[in-house]
Length: 344
Image (cartoon, rainbow, N blue to C red):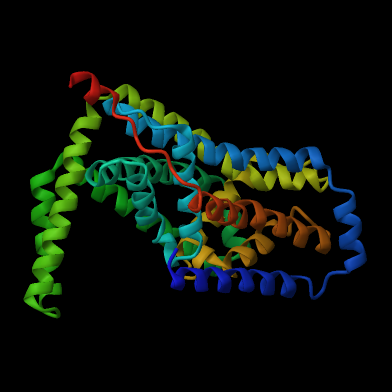
């Protein structure tokens, strides 16, 4: 981790402490202590298990993609990938650092750069597709409630959906209309060429063309493995489901047993979409505020609401950051290419 990333990590941890401190300003600390002592730990453990399953399923998916050409990729190395992703997603704006960090982690394990890029692109396509599908269902269920509670943020939700949907359309264009997509990119880049030097413009265009070609070649190979894709889609559905269920089990741990699991899960999907629009790493500030406003109707006690928000952020954000720090310093194994050795 670079010095700059370490500084950002320190700032984000300090910001988190400040936000939690600010959230406690109107909370009776005696009531908060009472709520902590009376947590139903079995449900909180279920929430922790949901997060472990979220990371574990992504590790299995990564391993499935890497080993699809016959390479042996250990689960120990595979679990490093989502954890390192969580760390760098959490300390970069718009979660932009996760993909490059995963690429480096895969290369450290011996996966070739081109192959690693292709694996991450295919994983990204499936993940984005499932996010869009889940969001569409959640929009039907919880958007009216969201609009009533936070009408101004509902625009951010729609904007976030448009961005994710546009990304999926772009990736599908590469997969099925490769030539047209390259021409479209060239047209889009023309106005950019008016403001940058020709050398830089050519470098950007070449880099984009290479990424498009790499993704297209890998997509052609992956499309022939439709059984693998179906498995990955199903596993990604359950991966996201476990993540979206975390607030529900946190509420159960605080004694709220009569809540609607579908509504709570749908609202969490919408919160995640709102967070993705905030430029601050991890959506800090916006995430806590969104949770507080949306779930205040379910949790009437102020101290329990703050406690629920605290537990939610610890599990869905800080847990991944600290686990990622551990994964970052863990030495990876080197990939074992069995098929190649057998052929030799």
